[in-house]
Image (tube, rainbow, N blue to C red; front, top):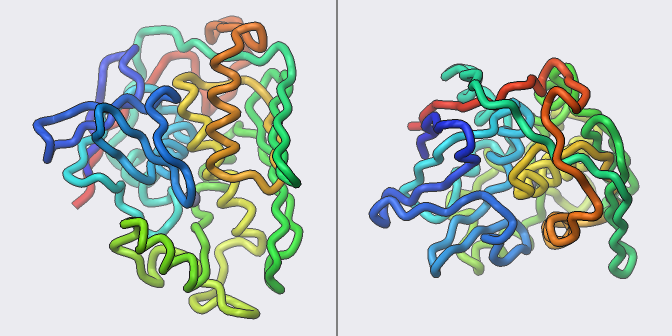
Length: 278
Ligand SMILES: [Zn+2]
């Protein structure tokens, strides 16, 4: 994978270097299947597991970048967004001339499915509150809330790793995912603990759900101004929220940076990133 800078207005675009540079924009209309991870598809070409990198882009304030891949699945690395954040920071971020536009929620939207819930409410900033209730002695009910200001993403969210059990791993392998999986790239749960501790945060599990949600909401194609509340949701509900928001323009308005409240990590101009992974 290699990240290249892109002109303002490009957005995030994946490019399959193994398929003559075929490009897939990281936007809601290209969402394909969602189960353990979020995949994009265009004209039969797939890009899988986009959420951790897209989450890092949001957390680092990146609006424009080309992501070259020679494979259908993004590198899992350590199962968090930390390595992506590190490579973005190392490569540097370029401030661009064009004024950033935000999607600012003006009305609420709530989705329910069985015991699962996800909603977005009007807010001048971008914040996420997530609750999980996972039947495991180490997890149980966890709630984590974060407002994406003052570098809080990098400090509190980026390093949270994905988690799963040995059974999940087999299921994912059967779907052709995590071909590179090992104890180095996710927290492996045992019956009453973790196989590869220690945890990076006591509540690392729910923080990773926040990371995933931010990555899936990046498919709005713009930075959002709203408060997200999620309870036991997953990729399918995250992406359903995105498409419902986009389908109903009466729920939001487009505002420029000058109109929206700025925060140190969401600066007025759009940004491009560059970096590479070997
Ligand atoms: Zn994840």
